[in-house]
Length: 360
Ligand SMILES: Nc1ncnc2c1ncn2[C@@H]1O[C@H](COP(=O)(O)OP(=O)(O)OP(=O)(O)O)[C@@H](O)[C@H]1O
Ligand SMILES: [Mg+2]
Image (cartoon, rainbow, N blue to C red; front, side):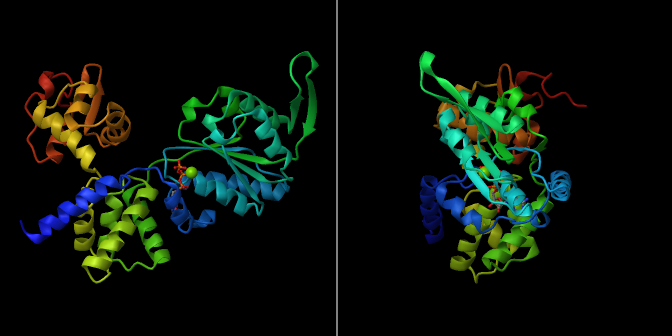
């Protein structure tokens, strides 16, 4: 076996043990790296033009009135910039940011302690706000609307409610699951921003910006190659950039060119559409072994040797978003685009059901 093949196999085996390169979530270590790449002002934010304009207006108006801005809800998939925007809101208002998260607030008392420590104008950032406990949620409604809460002391008939005034503050909530937020909580946000996936040319700007900050020399073609494989997600773009930089330093002269980016990402098994090994395995099994479907997700999972949840929650959402896979009542179906992506010719009648993909 040629040396190169062995090397590639070794790298593949090793990368299988690492976090998925195309996961939109970040672990603790990565969050530290990300901090250095976060835009610090609204002007530095790339893309999300509408959200940026609207938020800019809300903040400017609040500044002119000399008041804390309305509560802001940021929703959208992981890695698109919710935490970044929360930090920018505090920075643009020149106030401190208090940071907590839904899962950290298990009792209403936890929240009362945080709220009572706020100063006038502070920004309170509650990440994963949909995961807060019910009693804490109810306390939060009250705090958001009236800037006061009732703290319950004691239990049973002897319990007393002590009212607690809270200085006017701005709540910034972030959620990947806006649908899970109870209506009353959602309604108390004066401004809701929904973040969308980024266009390739926006990701291209982000890759250029991050490369500048990290001191990675790269060509325009190298940058746009990374951008186009990043699944519309800045976090993934930044991560791919770091892996391509490693490759460029070890296997080339350090400059990220188109061929360097291509070889690096091929080695890490991220293809031209941003699909990774699991994504491709799912499509491959679906087309080659099950004739394009429909096939149940449990069967599909066994065929690729993964847990059903992994296939359903990790691989499928992006395949559906790309238009490669459809979830139908009778099972998963590969679209003609999926067949083409694998270099195969779609059968004349996909999955034995000609009504699924009628020609227009
Ligand atoms: N508009 C943007 N311009 C430039 N970089 C961005 C932008 N949005 C996000 N990023 C980069 O992507 C990384 C991830 O963003 P961020 O942590 O804000 O995502 P998030 O939406 O909070 O994700 P999660 O749901 O996992 O908490 C940041 O390090 C930041 O550098
Ligand atoms: Mg975040």
